[in-house]
Figure 1 (cartoon, rainbow, N blue to C red):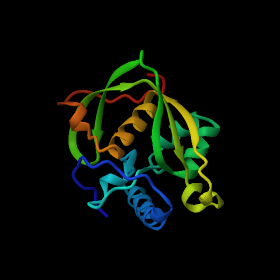
Figure 2: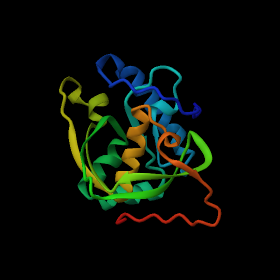
Figure 3: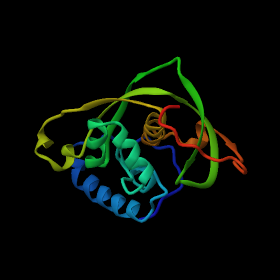
Length: 186
């Protein structure tokens, strides 16, 4: 598996007929991320030239992501145990709190972008039970609110599923001499 250059193709919602492809690609993505702890998450659109499916995988091998999930309590435990976010949709945006953030992307290595993100969002999505569990016949969606770094991460990955790339919304910048600071309470 390799990460491909960004493209502007919106992802297809994962439905029952996509489960086998999604499961196989999910397992490949987890295996790939296990050897790439510097990557926070990976959207399906970053690994396929075919029509991408609407999901992304957290890199639970990245200590920062693991720690950030644990800060969320029970919600974070669910994210770590699942490792996959399926059919995510932002359903709530806190309009008053936007912040400029320096971001990078595994699809555009060695480049950084200054991008505006919402500080707090609400997201509806399916977890791994949708693909692997007894809930395959049900349409249960989870709803969670994220702020700070996790809100930025979800927005970045959901942009990928919508066919939007960091270079579409951000301004490329040089980060020479800038030290990146991770703070859950931006």
